[in-house]
Length: 430
Ligand SMILES: *Cc1c(COP(=O)(O)O)cnc(C)c1O
Image 1 (spheres, helix red, strand yellow):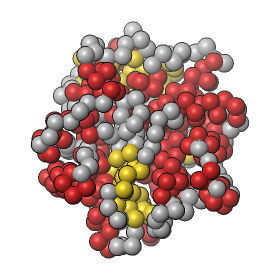
Image 2 (image 1 turned 60 degrees about the vertical axis):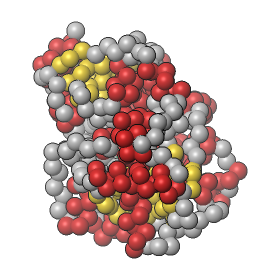
Image 3 (image 1 turned 135 degrees about the vertical axis):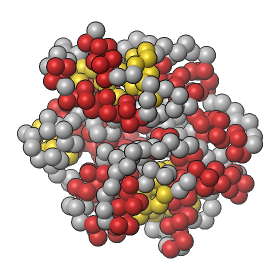
Image 4 (image 1 turned 60 degrees about the horizontal axis):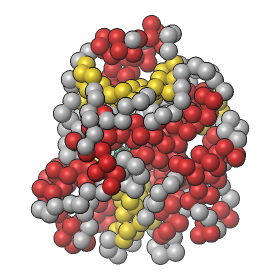
């Protein structure tokens, strides 16, 4: 597949180059040159396909010919070695659980897929790649876990000190080997700004190959389209008018859902559910796009003021505002509303949701008010015990810790404290 830069000021490139570079030289996000819908028979026959078979068919065009089919089969099978169950909560609302991977957030799939692609490309190549990534909580752990031990790849994770949950911090600071954690005296926005400065700093990029493992990287972003197909497989015989409510921060996940739709998945509508970081909710109301600095909330993985993937969504809908509005609704909720929703889901449906999933649930309810015939599926993007303090305080019940969480609890935190870009640069050049 050929990829072009959305800033339209760089050469087109291959999948391999798009993955290794992360961002185009003109700092634009890469986007595939064409999207060929899958045949109708694929969707008619989806009941007879395994998750790996679905994923293989769906992603093939985006990664070939650089990743040969036999290699892709293995990558997909290794990436998807856990379950993606749909749980129905009531007649109109289901949840798709995306937290059964090793770090218990949906980012595991993208991180594992990308790590394996980079690992494959590095077999032929002796240059080391440094993956530099800023995290608001879950990306760090998923990337650390996904890239652990991958030859020729060093991973440097920046996280905001005191602003990630204890479990998130353990997941990204305890692994060692090729994974280094930098604890930044600042916010997530500060971390992201430092990473962007590094990509722009030629005195650094001339000395090392830097890439990103945020959803701007096509190998992290595109595999997320699998989820929507997996949910469709489980639900299409039971419900019509399936609508996805996606708790959104950088808008990579919901944008991947739209790519599944472009591939022919018969889904009519998406809901971008936001916390108070709601630039897209406001845009759909006013048609003015006005990013703001992020504010801290209890759904911290969505505390993004300027969502990097929104430009890809604009590209999918060819910058047509009306076309976008037909396909996408967006709502925004406060922390108090989110806590109330967590309690409601617990009391009414006997289900424990994490704060991000609860925002998705609220988005579903808001949409159903005007569209009572829809069946809304909200993505449960992280396991509730990743946010133990909030969850136990709200539902007033102790939660058992899953094995994946227990296994990081006793680990030894290793992180280097930094405060400025110069600190980061000094670290990278050392
Ligand atoms: C990253 C994340 C999100 C937001 O996903 P985007 O693709 O950035 O919109 C939502 N919930 C959780 C738990 C996350 O980790």
